[in-house]
Length: 242
Image (tube, rainbow, N blue to C red; front, side):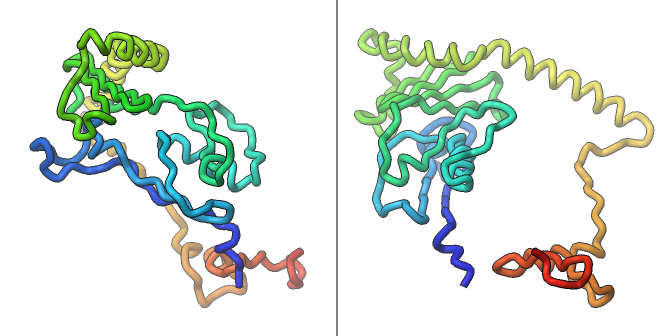
C-alpha cells in the first residue's frame, strides 16, 4: 500500500455559490450570502471531526497547503499573500485573532468596483454606483433589512469604512480598469486590421510524449507518474535509480 491516506489532506470547497431564483436573481455576481458563502470541508491526519465557526477565505488555501506540505516550515514566497494557514485552526490549535473577510468584484455586471467586508456578524457592501448595504447577519440572516446609514450603526460603519480605505482606493481601481480597457481595445482594433490574430492561448505539445507508445525503450514520465508509489526513471547504465 502507498499509505496516501495517512499523509493526504483533503479540502472540499468552491469558488462561489449560486442563486436559483432567490431575490429574482440567478448565477452569482454579487455579495449576498447565497453567492459568497461556500462550504469548506477538511479531512486528513491530525484533523479531528467537528465543526468550527470562524470566518475564513479562499485566500487562506494557499498558505494552508504550503503549511501542510512542508510540515509547518513553508518556503519563503516571492511576494506576500493575503491569507494565512488554516491548519492550526483545523487541527485544534490556538485560534488567532479574528479578522475581516474581504471580497472584491470587478467583472460582468459591475459598473464600478464592488467591495465586501465581513467582520463578525456585520457585512458591508460598497460600490460607487450603488447605495451602501449593511447587514447584521446574526439578527437578519436572510439579509432583508439594510441598516446602512442608521445613526445607531454609525460607529460600525466607520470601522468597516476604515478597513475598506486601508484595502484599496476604489476610484483609483476604477481608473486603472478603464485605462486597461482602452489599451486592450486599441490592441484589438489593430489586430483586427488585415489578418486577425487570436489572443487565445494555444500550447503546442509533442503528442509522442503524452501517451505510452509501444516503440522505443524509454519509459516516459506519463507511465512513471501513473504508478503509486512514483517510479523513478532508470539509471543511465540500465540499473536501478537511486
